Length: 119
Image (cartoon, rainbow, N blue to C red; front, side):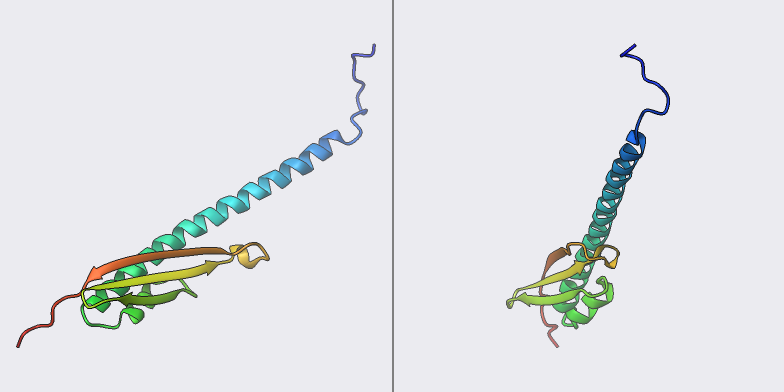
């Protein structure tokens, strides 16, 4: 009779398995949420960098154009030389505003400067 289990003799095994399973499920949920937020922010930073580089190449305010398209809290930096404009947009993300590690996302874009119109 040693191979047979009697009802009620689990001694909390189901509760322990449920607790570990729920913890693993929550970790996967937060990891998935962080990935979705990072990918979304990467797309927004890339769009903002493109907008900033194109606007600066046309002679406008690239920083203002980049900040309009960038996610909240992003930093828009411009550089380049006489022929090319380079824009870099960086943002630091907090998942659910919790005390979790910060995710840094950045994107860069370049554009050729347009020639000055001859009058």
